[in-house]
Length: 119
Ligand SMILES: [Zn+2]
Ligand SMILES: [Zn+2]
Image (cartoon, rainbow, N blue to C red; front, top):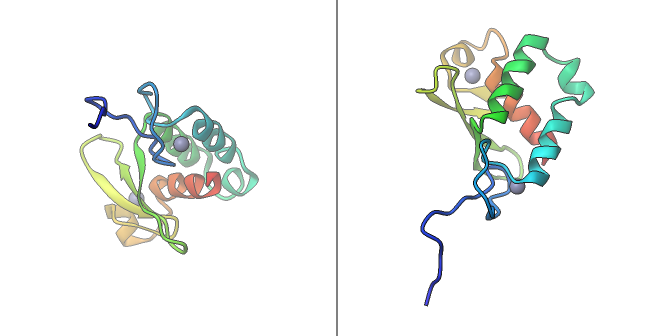
């Protein structure tokens, strides 16, 4: 007989079962890895500071989840700043309006990059 709890909380990054729900949807270990990745030189030096801040803030609020894990291209679901739209984001591309115009790197992609680094 299955004794699964009524609500399962899984880490948004590694999909491991969490003992307690967490505000950012991450397990303690993954949270540490992401925090560290957000300070990595290639993030800090590679993007505009306010964009990085936005990405990190969003990660802290659990706005990013891994959608598809393939060896080459990790695809994430990133919830937009307004909390209603969600975009499919990879490090190299994003489905948000700014991302589709591809003029600038949107912060969704930075969040994906941070996630990639933390993996
Ligand atoms: Zn995890
Ligand atoms: Zn975007």
